[in-house]
Image (cartoon, rainbow, N blue to C red; front, side):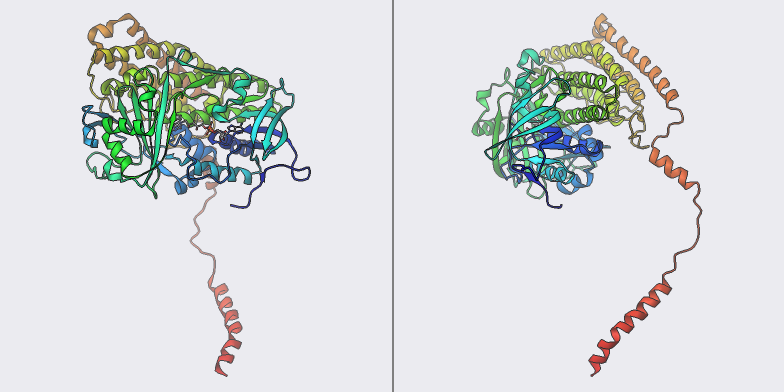
Length: 615
Ligand SMILES: Cc1cc2nc3c(=O)[nH]c(=O)nc-3n(C[C@H](O)[C@H](O)[C@H](O)COP(=O)(O)OP(=O)(O)OC[C@H]3O[C@@H](n4cnc5c(N)ncnc54)[C@H](O)[C@@H]3O)c2cc1C
């Protein structure tokens, strides 16, 4: 990388203080937003502000290492970082889930029931070393022309509409002012805009009852074989270690994420629910380790095999925002906007969706497109509703996490929506298509009630300690017709339908709703018997799913009609077009004559040296 520019204190002749966009906070969200803007909006002047040192120290732990499909595609495809990730970070082969067979015996992995990610995933993902990623991304951003101020935002003047905004920054003791048309709060839990606008909602009453906390350690030099020796020839074609491993118990779940393969560094942490597992029992390193020793001995032994680098405790994890993208040209993204829980590693994927929305709003506003404000409104609604769907994922987790059977059914059900709807929606860029957004909002309005209802049924099954079997989201032998949750219903990967609106999301939703209906029928039968199947409310939701299947089938036909003649991938079709003129010519370019004349001239140059040698 070439040398970069850090603006401690800009002087009149080195920098102007006027920008199109000022991004407050250079963590994952701010850095990715800056790169995405630079890649997509030509000639944009972008400033990034963050007080942390540019060269990040060893103790500079950042949480949020594991990526799932949307974040992985965003980083590798949208930001063009695939090679960088392969060379600098650790691969991630899906998520594994483990429940102890008996609470008092957790020393070995064989003491657990498992759902293994049993093969290579179709969209490659990574476990990021966040400090390294952020350090490197900052350099890349600067090379693209982003100006970095190594200082702290003290205040921001959120003027109405398109009026210029002023951002007050303290840089090495000096106050400076950056002016801009658009200001993005990516400063995480500092809530710069959130506080000014009273925009943040927290507390279980605002978060579908969610009241969770987190404790975690980072450990170096672990003995991986304590987890698994890597030999599992009959059960998997891939690594168990290079996955995000989730462990469960009453009122909590734990993650185990490898973040460096040379130093054998892992991040091990727990999300717990205050109503089931109070803070004061796990909020120090000793208490946390003791908890593990008694409840997940295998993880305790893994930690003890290495050197613990640090311990962190966050007593309150979840919050959300009332608004994300304002008509006054301010935006909140990343942790500044919302987070609920780390289960499934959704965080960076939600950031990716918000970033792409913000870039498109700013691009449209800079280009003075008449529909820019309408877009802003639509994207704001989409991201807020998407946040709500993420909140659904953790409703009543505290009650359900430890119940292996119910939780495995819940994971299966949530995976169906993720792979069947969210991933294709992202691949096709439908999340920044206003027509699709209104369909999505409509679907969500109806499905909202169903998610709440199914959740109540999960609770009921936990209360009566039902055993519906262990449902494995990766396997194709549990529903009908060889279905498994990551199955694709459009050949968007095989035919690289990666351009906006090329992936047929309606076909994916149609099939997903159908298989969810099959899943729900099986779930009702196993959990509640005939009475459950005939219950009017359950029948109503089955009909809702059938209705969605039919509506999406019509949507699929309309989409096919509208896109008839559209190539799957325009680069490929252009190459195929060019290829029509291809003719095989069994010839090679001549190189011997050139070689002969080159060696002749080399000989004549060498002559004097030879003469000298003979003297
Ligand atoms: C326990 C836990 C585990 C998680 N695990 C995962 C996971 O495995 N996968 C996943 O995808 N997500 C995970 N997440 C979510 C993930 O951590 C977040 O989505 C992500 O870190 C958000 O990044 P950010 O840039 O918004 O915030 P941050 O990374 O916190 O960055 C904010 C930046 O703003 C800067 N800043 C603060 N104040 C100011 C100021 N006044 N002026 C200028 N700059 C300022 C800070 O220095 C910092 O650099 C997890 C979250 C938690 C709580």
